[in-house]
Structures are given as C-alpha cells and as structure tokens.
Amino acid sequence: MTVDQASSHDYLQIQKDLVTMQEKWMEQINVQLVDKKYPVNAPLLPEVEFQGDIQSYKQCLLETMEYLENQRPALKPQLSIIKEKLTEENCRKWFEAAIMMNEFYFEHFAEESEVEKWLPVFLAESTSRVYIRQAVNQLQEELSKSQVKGCCPACGEPPRLAIVGKNGGKELVCPRCYYSWKQKKISCAYCDNDDHEQIIIMKPEGQEREQIIACDCCKNYTKVIDTRVMLEKLTPEILDLTTIHLDYIAQEEGYVLGEEELTI
Ligand SMILES: [Zn+2]
Ligand SMILES: [Zn+2]
Image (cartoon, rainbow, N blue to C red; front, side, top):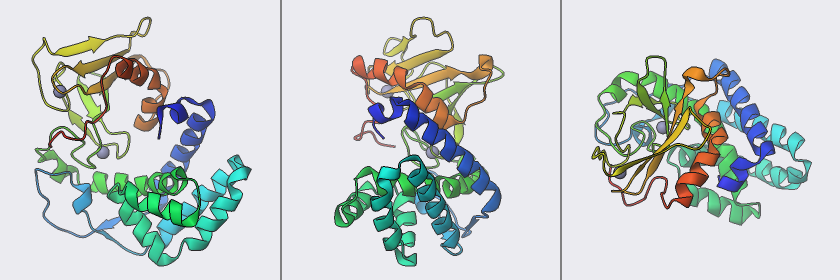
C-alpha cells in the first residue's frame, strides 16, 4: 500500500469495510495449527503450519472480490480473470505466499494474469489476516518467550505503531496481526537504542495525542498514539491509516519505515 492510496477517503472506507468482514470471519473460521516447537529468535508466523482445508480461505477471497466489484465496477474484468484462476492449488499458493509476505509471487501472478499489480496481493493479504490473527491468538504463550527485536515478533512486520493505553504504558502493536508487545517509553523499536540524544520526538502541532519517535542511529521511526482520549475505538490497522499524516512528517524529515538491512 502506498501513502497516496492510504490517504484517500475511499481507500479508508474500503479498509474499514474489510475490517468488518474480517471480524465476521474471525467468528466463523476455526484455524487449527500443527503443534510444534518454535524458535525464540525469529518471527513465528513463517514457522506456523496451518491445518485444514483451503475452502474457507477461498470463500473469504470470493467475498472480498464480490465486495470490491460492488465498490469498483471497473475492476470486474480483472476480478473475473482472477476468479477463474482460483483453483484449489492456487488458493493454497496464495495463502502460503500471503503468510510469508512473498510479494514476488503476487507480482508474477499479476503479470501473468495481466491484472493490476496491487490487486492479487491486496486480496490475498486482506483475507489471510484473519488466519494470521487467529494463529497469533493461539500462540500468545510462545510469543511471550520471543526475543525478537526490530520487527513484530509474530509476523515480522516493521514496528510502525505504538499505543499508549489505560495506565499510560506504551505498547507496540502490529496493524497486520494485532500482536502487541511492551516497549520502553523512550527507545527505538527497531534498534533498541535508548540514548536520549539520538531519539527524536516529534509532535505535530495541535495533536496532543500523537507523536513520532524517530531514531538518529538507524533512521527508523514509530508513530505513538495515546488512545486514552479517543472516543472511537479503532482497530490497529485503521489507526495506522488515519495517522498517515505522521508518516508524511517523519518521511519528510528523512526517516524511514522498516529499513531492510536491520537484523532481527
Ligand atoms: Zn505482526
Ligand atoms: Zn533505531
């Protein structure tokens, strides 16, 4: 997703609707995982083995496509091409590629199918999130032992968002998998640097509940939102999208999100 897409009102509404659909699927789908031992020094999700048939995932994909077709009738021809290609085997490949964040697979699929590049990955990712979140719910105990730093211990995404909750404590929260974990108040979520001289705190004018914590050591940043004063309870991915102005500010100042060369 690009910053431009996320800033559009329509795009935000689509994401909100998808969250509602995901919440419904969360109630309906029962994810089963193969019992196994997980490493403590790597994100868990790539190691997870999902059990069960792929039909429920296919059903979620079809519902997402139907929704998108209603919202964007112009996408219909492309969605039809994708629908035709959604064999059981391809559904399995999509699921695996979405879990592993294998964007290359989806780019290749889009190219081969002559559909827009963003479309397959968008469909696969927004539906697989339900499975990812259910897996994370089931793996809370394993995750509490994780020693992973610099990315989400559950799914490996950059730690882009932190929330200040009820008791004033700060927790990083992953908009993709919803896993949350503790973080020292003034420190870098990527490189763990807590040298106050290298940690830059930016507060946008007139936005008391929002700040950016940027690190001059690794040049990454995290958005911090105080949710105690918020009337509407937003899910982490919607909170991430509605604070896109903070990403603009941080990126204008030369900071980045999830620098590739960082080690875990
Ligand atoms: Zn995550
Ligand atoms: Zn840092």
